Amino acid sequence: MDIVVATNNHHKLREFNRLLELDDINLLSLKDENYNDYIDESGITFKENSKIKVKQVYLKLKKPTIADDSGLEIDFLNSEPGVYSARYGGEDLTDKERCFIILDRMKGVVKKDRSARFRCCISYIDEKGVIYQVEETCEGYISENYIGENGFGYDPIFLVDDVCFGLIRGSQKDIISHRGKAIRKIKKYILEKVVEKNE
Ligand code: IMP
Image (cartoon, rainbow, N blue to C red; front, side, top):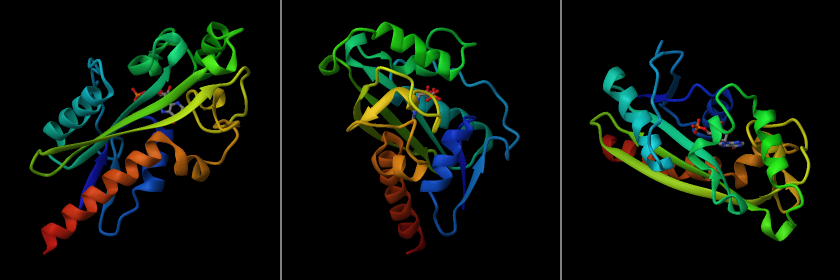
């Protein structure tokens, strides 16, 4: 069975490949499928956006599709950047520039007010067009400096128990991350469905 992973973010694709290993399931990227259409993430929640992604890709490719929508919520900034995490501060900025915008906005804010979380909603649309969604979070806080070069996005400014995501290996991040937890949940669901189908 083929499942299309609807993301152009190669970091996310790597996380999906690492965590969604399933016998008899062949994960395909949008590149493998020559899918280049623009996806308008116009939703105001992660749930809506991940649904938009899987529906749009499924309608064209007619294959089971999985997608996540994720981002960082900072309590001190009223949950910003949230669903705008990928575009925060402007479309053309680098991930590193976006991190520095946040570090600047959080300058002088004491540790107890630096709480934040990554949130991830994953949608899976099966061969019949039925959608299943899971949402998970990873609680932490914003560092005072830019730390490490591992990962992507806001990893170098996100701490869990004093450990920065910018310093840990991908396999370590998978254990506690929002996406790691959500992928494991959706994997369980897909496995159950595959078993049901084969019975
Ligand atoms: P999306 O592709 O619209 O879901 O955008 C997600 C954005 O949220 C990414 O571009 C990152 O900036 C941020 N993000 C989501 N997950 C992570 C993560 O695991 N680490 C760091 N940043 C993340």
